[in-house]
Length: 185
Image (cartoon, rainbow, N blue to C red; front, side, top):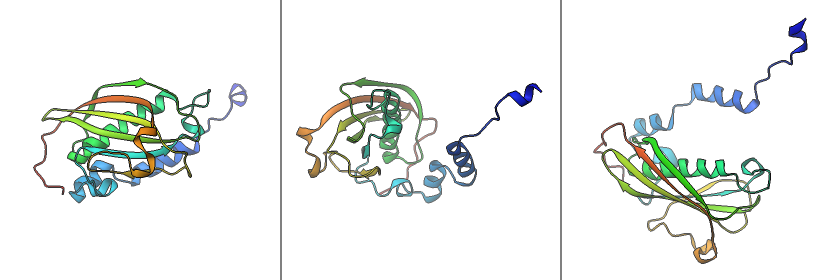
């Protein structure tokens, strides 16, 4: 009788889909290793030290005040910093050793963000990255687009002088394997 009073345990749809696809899809490290080329991850990198991306602040990324959640900023620093490191060697993502963020201003739901990741130092055992999150022009759609540039400058359509800094973060990763001496160009 006590079991009848407890609500049934329901697995969220997103978790069910994620578990189903994880079993059939190889990891990004396996895809890069099998291809032997960084383009297997995101396409051709124009620079081996920078990665830029754009995203719109959606309700799913917002806190109760309608602005970008600090946890989402931390995730962006983690992911974009790692992608910048992977532009140097797609087989060495590393493991996080230290990460910090400075929150400079808010980004509201609907605003378009430009996330710029760069490698500050890439050594045998440690990699250091910096990620800058800026408010760009208003978003047109909820899609994520990636752009990589040789000098890391913002594209012409999003003037750097008018961009507002939302956060800056640093991410240090330790490498558990020796670098591959493979040309990924």
